[in-house]
Image (cartoon, rainbow, N blue to C red; front, side, top):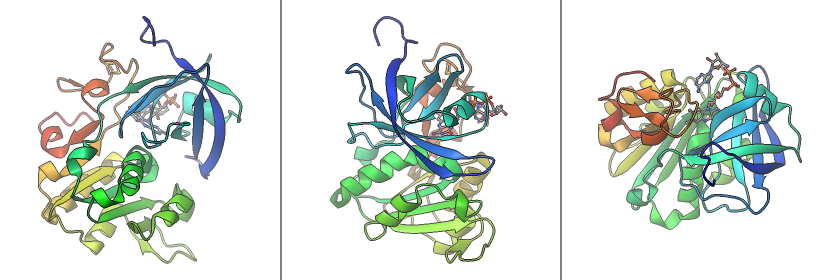
Length: 274
Ligand SMILES: Cc1cc2nc3c(=O)[nH]c(=O)nc-3n(C[C@H](O)[C@H](O)[C@H](O)COP(=O)(O)OP(=O)(O)OC[C@H]3O[C@@H](n4cnc5c(N)ncnc54)[C@H](O)[C@@H]3O)c2cc1C
Ligand code: FES
């Protein structure tokens, strides 16, 4: 990055996939660095993506670290910058700086059962961990993925989730029943209670809307998970990404530096400013 920590590298959009349509549409972008640039990242880290003249947004890196050819990002259209991303086409060039934040301690989880619980766009930050665990399948015990969206059309990574079946237990859900939907109907925390994953030798990793995370954690504790077995990521608004502007803090923590990955044992002691 040179002397200027805010200077983005250039990356070209190599592929765009429309994951989810509607009001809160999600598109997945594959970015390839230009001019021989690039950086290594760890599972759970994010990057500041920018469009010239439009602004920048912090987005989770949704591809696993072992994938070297590109970095993947799934972006929900919620405002100015994310809407501008949705207007881009393959071949367009954007800015990228990072990687930022801490990461999931995946190596420390070897030999454990992994229970992933995602909702909405919250599958993106935990997707690199799922990909890594599947790529190193022999290093982990049972792998279970709970994931839900509002309706069948809101389920992201549909084809990829289907491919996981066999190596991984996948439990999908939608909030409201629709014709043709044969999996669970109800909120993600309810699907969790329906399947009752065991806390024995397990780690639970959850990401999604704050209200979902709240009830998922409550239900995990009811199932017997201890606070040090539960991990989540938080998405406080960020500006600099490097611990300088104070935009993202929770209590004394700058989330861009100390987070976005937190063990619930640590997060529960901080003010609920997330
Ligand atoms: C660590 C981290 C990882 C993230 N990962 C992803 C990701 O993988 N995919 C993704 O789509 N988004 C992700 N986000 C959220 C993303 O950064 C914001 O949605 C984006 O910056 C909004 O920019 P905008 O200019 O489009 O919206 P704005 O025009 O700035 O705002 C539109 C609306 O969204 C609200 N808003 C803006 N930023 C946030 C935020 N961070 N959290 C909640 N509400 C916000 C505003 O208050 C406003 O109501 C992540 C955020 C963080 C901090
Ligand atoms: S975003 Fe500036 S301190 Fe975290």
